[in-house]
Length: 186
Image 1 (cartoon, rainbow, N blue to C red):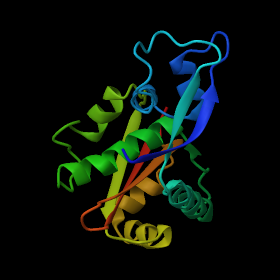
Image 2: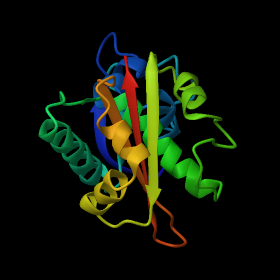
Image 3: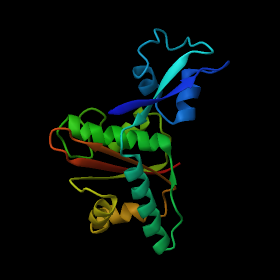
Image 4: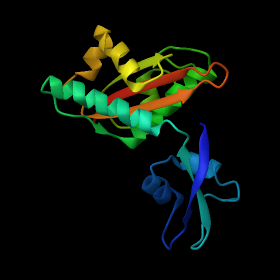
């Protein structure tokens, strides 16, 4: 993942890396990778300064996609989806995985199906779906593409889902953006 280190956190008594990761909505492994000075992830000390990785510049784009999804749902009288940061994290990994493996499919050569990928990241769900796209430049463009496709539109407007995660990554060689939406019923 492409992260910028632009925030720090001072460890307090009873903190763990898991608590810090949850507080800042990042994965524990990303937190460990952003802090090479930590030799044992199970041992951190009050007063220690921890680097908090933050997404590069796609968070606002992801948020706009979620807003547009909920606008489409509202237009149909369907309840809004709640963003789940852990599902968004999986969606970011999926977008990056498509770039890393030069594969634009739902089934990853690394993570398997979208369902297997969610489970491997510890996400609990009773139903799930995934929309992927690449090449669009704006949230509105990718939403127009998805809404013009009956399968993608059905996922966006499915009343069965109550949470969403969105992840965007940029291919450094082509500049193309890759988009992933993951819908779950928790």
